[in-house]
Image (cartoon, rainbow, N blue to C red; front, side, top):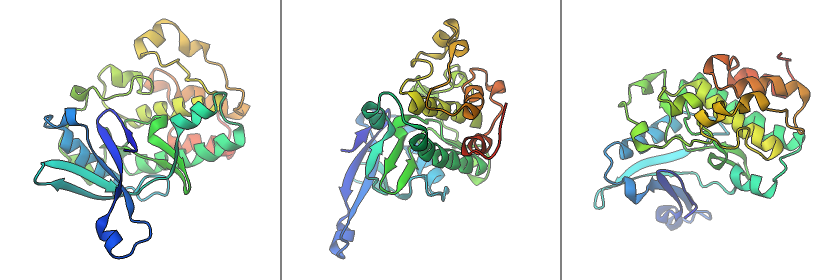
Length: 268
């Protein structure tokens, strides 16, 4: 087992066919649902939705899926995908409790913003951006686990409408406040989640101390936010705007935020 999330379990797996033909590295990753979701009618469909969304995202910073299959004997659906070797950002943060210096932070942030901008341009929303769904590996940064994602545009928007809320799957510490209050997933919600991750990488602390949205509003934490010391001054206004509780105030998209952080423009 490599890891387990709210719904799925991922294993390091040996592909016997690859091995039979002499592949020196026959290992892949295999994701299936946790046992407690076996009886949920939407769960396997969500797993297929994750596969369908990800296989249409041809980006170097998005994990590559291989196949979606069903074990007919055990009636168990699963996805095979590239095996990532590296460190997820939640583990990296445990090792770097004071955050990352700007050169290291920038090297992670720009590929992530690239991947997010690309996915959003393709009409795909991730739905669960958090440190444990981002890996820093031998081949760079990878964004993965689109299990709560959906397509707002393109052919995939006609995938079956699935009730994600009934699975209680949003991650409270990183989900945008409007998601926790029942609003639909949007690009602005994705960017809020990514902004929380970027803030945490910059100073080692979550911007809102992982409080649920209503508690965060009640305690005025949004007004108390301070610029992380590892973040250049020119980057802070854009990040602070993206961390707004009100989605209407998140006026930047992923491509614009990337441009600011790359130093290509200023935003006030």
